[in-house]
Image 1 (spheres, rainbow, N blue to C red):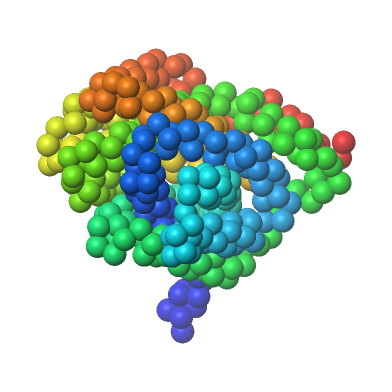
Image 2: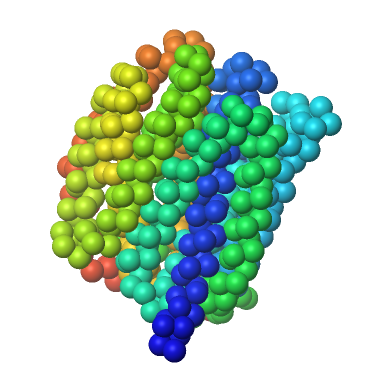
Length: 423
């Protein structure tokens, strides 16, 4: 009887993480399939970078608004709606391929739709962690680590699966698989009832304008200096990392005719990330948040150097695994800081502001990377990206405020947050 009760009590976390990993696998498939599709349709790395920039602009408007919606109505149905819309956009590709109607404008439209949708689901599921953990009786730090580890595990499985599907069954089957996974994520998230309730205190914001709501979340994040600095560093490093994953490496392996090698290297990166994220709950109890972040910065800087020289696949896989393992604890660390330093009524907006910054910077660098690859080649561009990544990580070690991630939240960080709904 006790076992059955325990199994039932874990249902919110199990369902949330099922949706999380299904979404991760689907996204991992798409992150391989889209650049390969563009390269095979057009042969231009720069075009893929341009599509990335065009696609991200609407999401910069949508994401902050969704943060307010999460705080108002809870993350459950925001996540479900995102997954349903994502499935629709992905499934349109095999449909258009089947009728020989897939064109560059169609790819751009679907890429824009996906860029708007996917960060919404990711943000909503992040906001669902605390209520799901509370309903299941599991420590939130532990669930934060599990959540990011499983998402990374999905990305570890997604790239090789996507590469194998493209090579063996074609582009249509690849996107069909990703669409089915998005539907599964929507169904699973629909049953996470604990995440369907808005945060205590969020109800007061219902009568206020969207700008007032957004300003409250932005003000809370900006006034918290350690969290603000961590968010900025994380976004800059992501902007330097993602172009390698979605432009440089696909072009490099496409040029040498080794799609499977691409899947191996990206899976090694994701696999290392899974290990690092899983370790977060164990590490934070033993060495604290500051030490975790310092180790992450050193590890990623060291691992980025051999990767930038595009060595043989085994060495690239080892360096990628080290990079992933070093950076794996950072995302759950950021989530824990939001959950412990921000009021529940504003967490959705804070997560959305972070995701907006995280989403805004990479496409700009992706565009520049695509243009650079077409002009100077993969080798030169990856050396520049690797050097910038390593230098940024090492310089962040000298930022004084990042040595205070374990410090209590400053009172001014919360000023005005609780009053947003009463203005």
